[in-house]
Length: 291
Image (cartoon, rainbow, N blue to C red; front, side, top):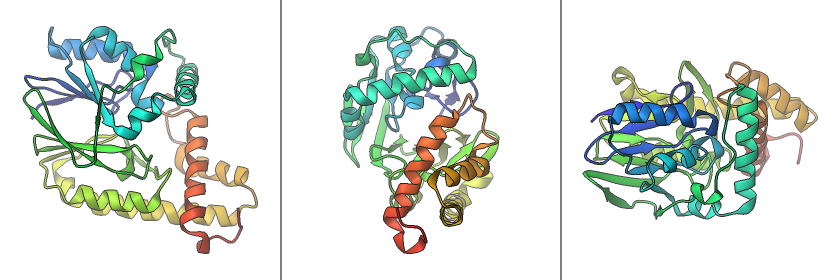
């Protein structure tokens, strides 16, 4: 199966799966949209993008959609039903626009805020376990709740797995970022669900293809890192008297090495605060300081 990283800025953000029908996995950042579209056009040589598969509704995965729709007006966007609901909410759309602007400013790059909110809408919603045909491709969607409640992963033609962030986030050049924003136990279950599919290729969100020599142990590795990150975060939360102090320490541990073009500090703090709330809810017996 032919797939290519077509991220507009950096690596590991957007992938093009070729065939009679051409599918994008994710749409990337608004500030990376123009170079992304140019890369796609070069790859396709006049061909069209038929579909976009979204793993979830966060701004860094959807804000490139307006540029994709301008380039290929007939494109269909697929995502979970929950993601479709979220992308109709005025509060979510406002947050996407604000964070897109802040990310562009942090990166020192241009972005186009003059888009219609309708450009972010989902055209076809999918259910957990649903399989659909997109041209010559068979696409199987399954819920991988944990990063968000609308997170989906996909399997293309029974061969290629496109993973949501729930199973773990490794940067293009290594490193690991915990991402169980809403459900740590759900993240463990999502790793188990993903492990059960005997695919030939795996793409990790924000990272890229898993090397052949690593595929046999990738799920064990991701489960190990998930458990380690939980223990680190619980330790930090117990060591500090306030959430602000804990967040600063978590930023130092997990985010200080991250290129701010990939994730601005505010986005990390939002995510880390959400993970702290999740740990308080699911592991109250492990915490010395009550919420």
